[in-house]
Length: 76
Image (tube, rainbow, N blue to C red):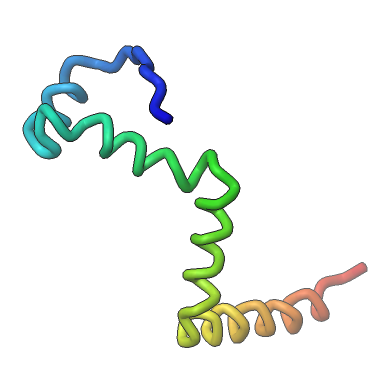
């Protein structure tokens, strides 16, 4: 189900959207842009996609494990 929404944006932003996205595609562009930030399914799908990237996950694990050494050297 779709809902109609009226928003206000600066004229230069509107002109840029019309030029780059196209006059009949702005609504879909903004919807797709906002979806991962406001819907739980969008967030879950994003996290699932990130977890599926094994090289990225390995790099993140190496980075986070490297932080443990930094914390151990700090005075208490």
